[in-house]
Image (cartoon, rainbow, N blue to C red; front, side):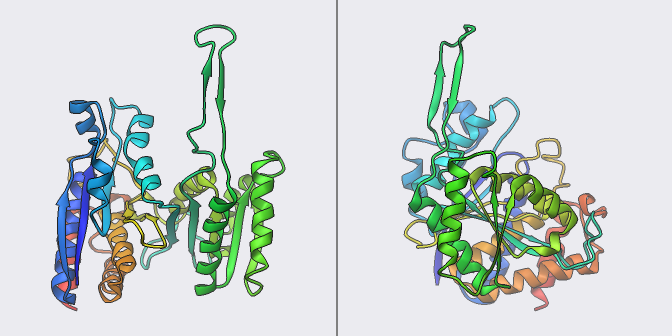
Length: 351
């Protein structure tokens, strides 16, 4: 089988962890008998500085010719975050109906949680990815005057809410049959009350699933105090975004946090990106932890149907962390990005 991958290293450490990941993917493809064809794109903040756009007018069309998109990171000092986000990430997510954002939160073997939680930590955050609080509806009037007014609307549709919740419930069926919903209906009385209503309605189709509902503030507290309680957590765009950073912090930090923007129907390419961002403070120093990108590549292989390679990569990552000898500074080690990459390649070669 041959797959076409659109590769966007992006900004900062994306230009280090994505090339490292391609080395790992090449090793796996040779070992497991499939082919990968890469098409590289320079869409980034650097591209914006040169052209005034994050990608060309036909950028979406070019990316649409791939089986999956592998993105490193977007964002760099000098380019406002709303420019980089709305110029690249959000257009891709929406054009390709990547309405599910998946963020696994798992305590890998050999890594100690900062919380020293006594239980096993292994849950998945399912974030609505196309609408909600990140809807581009609103504006300003009377700018620069005492009457200046700013409006930002949150848009929740039945289709949008139902499809992400159905995905989350179905995922819970395959796991430990537990699901938690993030809400704030005691304060946000229209959209969040509707979110709760749809959660209750859809739960009737999954009677074997144990369901719970948490207001977002106490949910954050429970992530810290009882992360072992959770299995699948479904959340709106904003709440899911916040939880997706808090969750990885509980299990060792963003350096090991993978992520995926999924079009479940596979009508369009899905996009895979580590959670950590461009990290400009360490860019170019060969100190970035590539595990988040490797794990993200593992999610991509699983999505493409290459289960043998996906399982091999996940097992290799856990072997590396369990041994604990070749880890980057964020995990208490002294290894470089290239050191970790070489060790992963060595472990793969032994299988």
